[in-house]
Length: 260
Figure 1: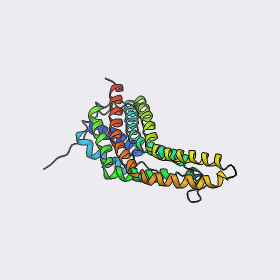
Figure 2 (figure 1 turned 60 degrees about the horizontal axis):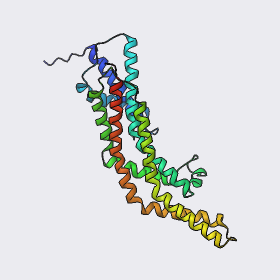
Figure 3 (figure 1 turned 90 degrees about the horizontal axis):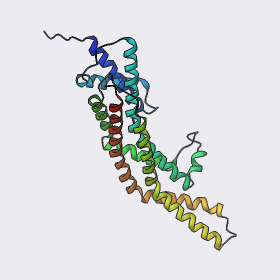
Figure 4 (figure 1 turned 180 degrees about the vertical axis):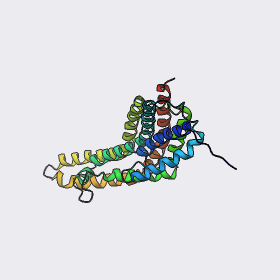
């Protein structure tokens, strides 16, 4: 007869692992969206924690309720840092779309959009849709789960630390540069159109620049977006490798900050 024995150490380990998985599910791409119900996020976190429990190594010797509470907060902070690090690449794509929108006059359409009721980025939404498709096609969600599994070896349960600020700050700075590179083809094309419109205005001062400027910039911005779409796909695919590097830096920073 098979007998299954579960002690307090295993229960404590599962609860700490659940806190780490919950932090990832709250902030991770796709499942961390506000459109995903919290009950579904909790169920996914419980399922992932249950799968990883046999290889988690268990929790350290159970301490007082205060020590367990502090350990749970540390695990939750580490999970949030991992999920936020994975989500940063989509912030870079959104930033690139915002820059392209503001330069090509699509930003005005976003500010007065009657459908959303809030500010919306036209080119940014297109780039985000492409980024989501690339993320799913390249198994980016599996990469996030693999990062969660690797965190168990890098930062054992009970020693989780939220001291990942320097790693996340450095990653954010690098992704700002990546956003500029993604938006560069569209912004450059619209700047050339602005230069041509300026020369046209100098040649014909009586021309109403405001009347023709918006349509021209919209057409140039849209045309540049379509022509640069293969480059955008390649750049956004490269962000997946950047995401793996960010997760590694977060784990390294957390491992160094973890108590010995």
